[in-house]
Amino acid sequence: RKEVEQDPGPFNVPEGATVAFNCTYSNSASQSFFWYRQDCRKEPKLLMSVYSSGNEDGRFTAQLNRASQYISLLIRDSKLSDSATYLCVVNEYRDDKIIFGKGTRLHILP
Amino acid sequence: EPEVTQTPSHQVTQMGQEVILRCVPISNHLYFYWYRQILGQKVEFLVSFYNNEISEKSEIFDDQFSVERPDGSNFTLKIRSTKLEDSAMYFCASSVRGQGRNYGYTFGSGTRLTVV
Image 1 (cartoon, rainbow over the protein chains, first blue to last red):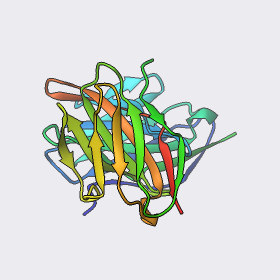
Image 2: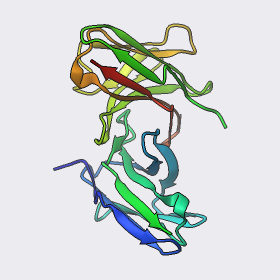
Image 3: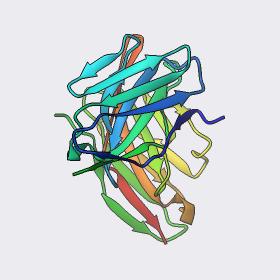
């Protein structure tokens, strides 16, 4: 079973729409969760951490469901600049590494 | 905003040659990492480094790989005898670890290694 699984997409979404991604993780001991964004041939950039209580940053909302071992990312009022690959990332605190999913590609259409 | 700096941005080398990839982590970060991403594939963990020693490494990080922090600011990845399959983007990252929580990593812009 893969450690971190994501729907690879692509998601083709019109500008202004709302889009949501899910990600499942296999290690129940995972303690830290993140969404990263990666543009083509660029480095991953931290979008937001995901907390147990859920968190929001502007148009972005992240949620964690420990019982079902998934995290989600919701993007409201999508912009053309949101087009990228969104990477789900998990970490078990005592493990000194973070594990990446393969990413979900998002294309925002004008 | 503090940055992780990597050099060179692109390195072409012949199979069997040694390469050294260089990174300058963010100055107050204590944990350092190398990851790689083969074109079209996911980002893969190679090695983590803390307190001047390797804290964890993956099965990819075999005897051909080594890391060093030679002078307190640079963090290097050496591949002793490159293979074609080492061609990838190599990302350096650094992080601050708060008590009980990982605040996320900052990645450098990467070195694209092409082995010919």
